[in-house]
Amino acid sequence: MTDDGSHTLSLLNSSECYHSKHGAIQESNHVFINAGLKFVSNRSLNKINILEIGFGTGLNAFLSLHESQLTHPIHYTSIEPFPIEKSIWSRLNYEQQLTVKKGLFSKLHTSPWEKDVEITPLFTLLKTKKILEQSKFDRLFDLVYFDAFSPDTAPDLWKPEFFTVLKNKLHSDSVLVTYCSKGIVKQALKSAGFYVKRLPGPPGKWHMLRASL
Image (cartoon, rainbow, N blue to C red; front, side):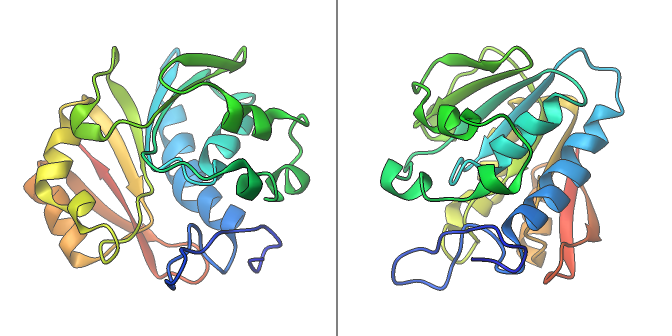
């Protein structure tokens, strides 16, 4: 249980959590919805194509699904090589914490992999277990939720080479948001050709990053 009453998960034999202990929903709203989705929603887009690195608990997708009812239709692609099991995600309390139609959180998790699934008329989900380097998409993305485990836990995902691969899957004016503001991450993004801006972080963190092309 995190400080805002929403659940997170911790890695076995590790101090690393999927979300902030100061508030899982609070953090995801701050980093990915407010600094990412709402920022991009100000543009004249018919549909927002989102790429998420790390489906994890499904919280970011769930919050974006909720937001799609208020802004633009969303096509949401999420990369997750190691999905969590139903016995775990079914115990998360996000549906109780948010005013979203009952059953949609479960639908996000149980939807088939490797195919587009219409969760609602305004939100389409594509989940893939392929790593980014092996993935071929039929669209370029407007927004990236970079929610991978930390550089200490998954260092290869925060290197310039990875961000370069990612850059080739984006529009020329795309935006990336992430909770991590370490100097090595800022430098890796800059080395890959991104312009990086440091923003105030959610409760418990001084800063976050928003990068653009």
